[in-house]
Length: 295
Image 1 (cartoon, rainbow, N blue to C red):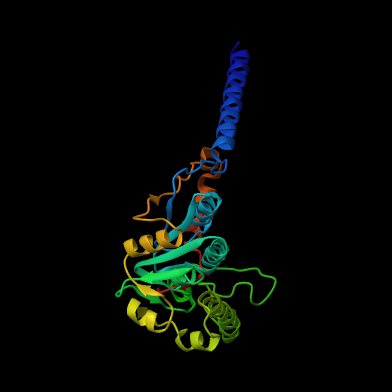
Image 2: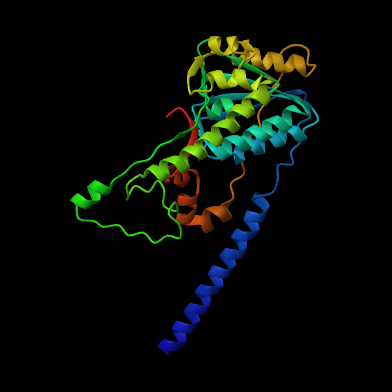
């Protein structure tokens, strides 16, 4: 009798799990659909980039949303960021460049728009900065740590199996060799050159002029304007009004916000701990992290 009860209970439990999984999948499919809402009134869109640039997807989603809206002729990109990881910064740069080819995009720099924060601003139609905004910092940084001696002191040994001498370059568990340094320096130099070219192209400046100030130095908004890295000194409101003028809107333009990101409950349930370590925080905590940052 107990065996039959166990079988029935197991069957019921499996059925409940399957039904729950099916409902979650249906909900996830619905919630991951693209933004389809249409803006009827004319106005200026607002996209904000705040904090470290660890992932590009949300900023790209918002820019693409406004690009699809026929009534939105201009967008203000408010940047308040010290920079971030190289690839996401490059992806946002690419999206800003595409947007600027079709509509007007005005950058408004907050207190800090440096390194990756400047990188994503460079291809905009126009850049506004406050006189005291901190910007530029055109450079690349790769920070490494070594805890080999500490591991020895507490009696912990680390063993690595690898297929090439550079496979564990930058590992905190072994000495940083001259060959490691030379190899990684070449990577940094190449990435830095990409940054210089992106600024020169975005700002339509001679590449040699950019190289002269591409040594990681920070600049105030006033200094950046002298070097033609920004166009005008002004506030967020000034940038909004300029975007309205460029969009052909008379009077103060209506400020339009993108729809909130839809929560994908399926991803939340299926990713679990894996999502935590593969997401932005997990990537930021990984050992080998090259950034367009001011840290």
